[in-house]
Figure 1 (cartoon, rainbow, N blue to C red):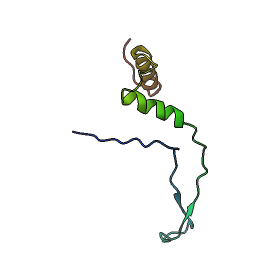
Figure 2 (cartoon, rainbow, N blue to C red):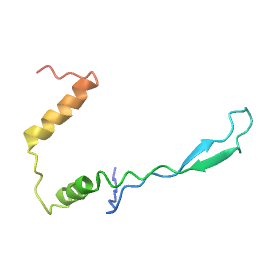
Figure 3 (cartoon, rainbow, N blue to C red):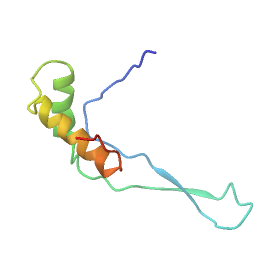
Figure 4 (cartoon, rainbow, N blue to C red):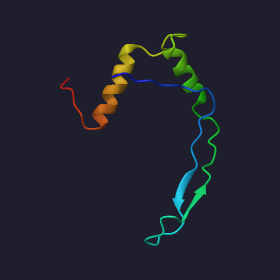
Length: 84
């Protein structure tokens, strides 16, 4: 199975979110769009660095042992153990 991914450099944007304008049954067409506030590109620099690592432009500043510890910590927090 082949996966294709694309990273676009720029501010992270949240889509506008449809919210039910009416809570009445049968009012499926009663929708309105609300604007989600701009968070100011909080993670832009992090994602740009990640893309550079993926493209091989820079070396990952975190070693294999660190990445493995992070993944194991997340999985343990989800209730998955490794017997180590």
